[in-house]
Length: 267
Image (cartoon, rainbow, N blue to C red; front, side, top):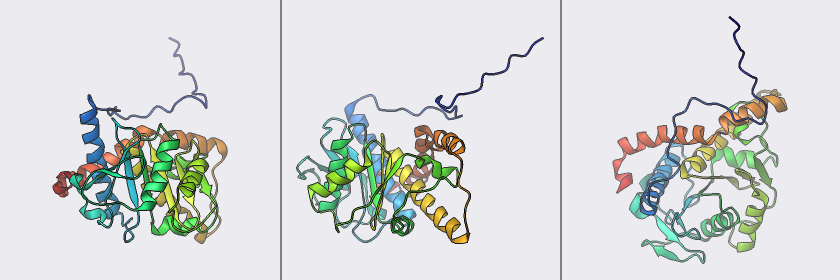
């Protein structure tokens, strides 16, 4: 009996990963809004565990499913480890608080509103001032594909190489959004990292993965001259580790821990 060999996968075919499907959206606008808010609040708790907090800096946003020009964001000067669903603010396209009792900061509005406006495909945006992200941002270069996880950003991130202090004007936010283009992440020179996703889970996981990629490259560069993957190797790893399903599942592992250990996050 002749055994027929499985055809080789071509470079443009999607990678087959053994991951169960996760729902892309909920059955109603109300359910989807509740889901995004829950995941957003949990993402802040996860960021606190990774010590991504830095004073009043850092913000994650989630587009409202009913009003796409509005987004949910963390309130000003509340530590990531204390944020609950009920703390989240709904901000309109002019920066006004539509729902919530606190205020947010201008940098959160100008950066995130510009990216949300320029990228209708983006549901969530993550930005924080991390140690390794900021250290790498001083080098004025992109990440190299030196480990498989770093390849989630292979040819899928940009360097924003302008710096004018805090982002307090619309034009600066628009410049970041324009430079980001259709990519999933940006290194902001002398500033930090920014990631986007078609879900809160994706944006948050890409941020975690990118910060760790920065850490790994800093360590590898300090130890010597790391081998950079070939284009073919990096492209395969990008399909696997840049997979949206991989990101959502990876985030959910962390989210389950937070929900179990810190149930007040859902209040």
